[in-house]
Image (cartoon, rainbow, N blue to C red; front, side, top):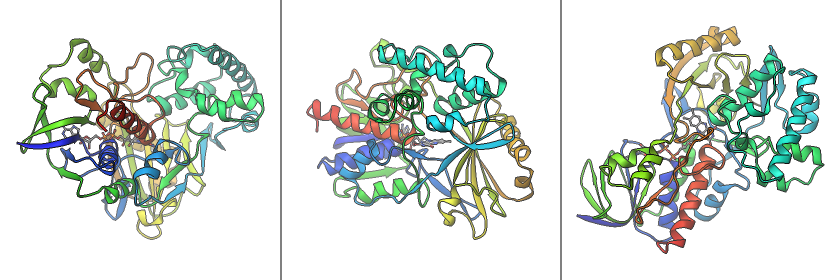
Length: 438
Ligand SMILES: Cc1cc2nc3c(=O)[nH]c(=O)nc-3n(C[C@H](O)[C@H](O)[C@H](O)COP(=O)(O)OP(=O)(O)OC[C@H]3O[C@@H](n4cnc5c(N)ncnc54)[C@H](O)[C@@H]3O)c2cc1C
């Protein structure tokens, strides 16, 4: 039986970043990925001459966040990041940039003035509770919204909640929007400070990687020390025996010192034949996932000309439209435009129906799109392995089994997507150091 110091299960961005860091720290690592490709939901591939990503992606906090730490410490090749530009809100057939600061909020006349004043007052209440140290993870956005707001304002708040957590505002904890670090670091006036506590991700630097989201995976792979890290694709881990410290895969058996598991944490009981503490398995079973639908459209002419992406509050379902070929023209054939449209899906959705309805929504919002369609590609994916709603749990990096650690977006509640995955890898590294495994 082959023996390895570290075995990493899963070759998405979390597993690959973990393998890279461990390899650069001088450890011997074997990474096993069940698919024939690496990247998980952080990947790009070709469709009819276009290069699509697994869902539209913008990466937050690259200038000073957790990914920056990993890049600075472990990357030899750094992706080329392009600034995202602005988020445009489409509401009541009008378009305005998203109001990231107090001044823009005051003039954000897509919503009635009375509603904006009401929401300002609400911000004061939230800020007061936040400063008092109240647990805002148990209070939903809807808990703070009284009756009497106009329908567009309710739609706007619901839309923002969906994009931040994948759930409507009555399921979205207000804490999801509160950024303590950002709040502390702002030196502007008090009103701006208060406003900023609810402007978590967007107020941070956001970028798109030139060459598509795959370029992050390409950079990680190119930085991995080959003598230290072995990667095997097409090899699924089917069983973990933690008493013996062995795993069984579709191609063999291995012994490990330390196992890093980056698949769905909720799959762990099955993989260990339920030989984990009962209360731990019960908590893993409460991890929550959402599905997201993306429709990629190749267009014969450039229809999206703004410097950023668009949030369509008017559409049913809410839509995020990202013209990725504006950041990198090589993603589409010459003279064409590639746009990703991401939709959050209702509970108990019917896949076929949602695909049809979502495409019709795009065409209704802008009939010029339908007349110019050159390529259509659908993706049904899970953007986050644990979505932050009221009462949602996240698994910890540390498990009750001392040789098994978890990594990935279901182990960490800070931020979202690739930034959240990076936080998780940083927590993993510091935990391994504390446990003297690194
Ligand atoms: C539509 C959409 C939009 C998104 N938008 C953004 C965005 O704008 N910004 C952002 O930062 N992020 C975004 N994301 C999220 C981001 O892509 C993910 O959070 C991140 O890629 C998750 O990485 P991960 O490694 O934790 O998980 P995954 O990518 O799920 O990786 C897990 C890997 O483990 C493998 N695996 C599982 N079980 C086994 C097993 N038993 N044996 C071997 N291998 C196994 C899987 O095949 C997979 O490759 C988006 C995602 C989607 C789908």
